[in-house]
Length: 392
Image (cartoon, helix red, strand yellow):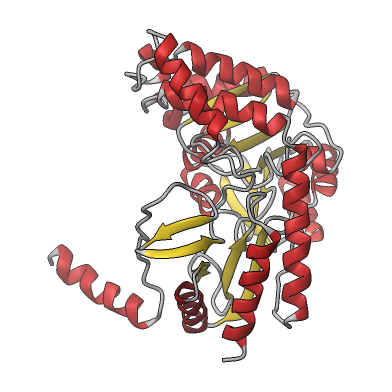
């Protein structure tokens, strides 16, 4: 059988089911007003929550770095453990650790790689991974690549999680609780207060992917732990991504000295890949300053979230219960989500339709993401367009 014979029918079926994915082509900088697929539009699909992706201060830091640092090549040249660990990588890891109040952080080229590395490296055959049903795909894949037993509990169901913790404890199996901090397709938050108490009660490790919380939540943007007034303990592992609120790219794992050293020594996704470019590390260091001093931007983001939610509910739209920048409008059928998304594009708004398998069957939606860079007028314009689409 040829590749075409195997996959052509599957591709055709995906088209029939309104599940076919296509890459939009962007012709402008990442910002609210963009040109995508030749359409001039207001973008409500970006994860650039603080509006840093096109921030002039980050651009200037890169220009100055290139002009003043002869040691600043673009490519890192190798993996971190060969010759790819440059000064800006090292300084960035230290600055992130100081900011978060942890012993160490470790850089990865993507959040996906970080999530693969943590579970694959730390969990062994006699261990148990207990994961929220709606965790990000990278967390699911990381669990599958581990030798540990992989069990999922219903979304945010702490009673079900505790039962599974009791079962693991009865088997003398080391458990790791794995959860998103902010769930990427729903926008709701994991109950970290309860999760931390359960982890400590049953001597479990707690692994939180805080991709959508880092930068946006807490007084200093430290994410979900700061939002809930918690401190990570020595058995807590946090992943933060840098391509969302930081406006750059890459990720880090934060936690104890021993945990980070274990990833360096045994983590295949860390050992066997080229380090991120030095220039990206330099850009992240500048973005970190903006995040640390970004309370005004976080307050603007929260106002924008409240503004959109109030308007959407007044229109009778079905929103998922989310207080974060991710505001899903539930529509059910994939065909409906695609029609709404296309109608909004024609009206000048880029709002992505999210369909299975990214979300469960009959849970297709529009995923509206808000930024501190959006104006109240732009949000009102989107609400007006949504009203027209809903009533058409």
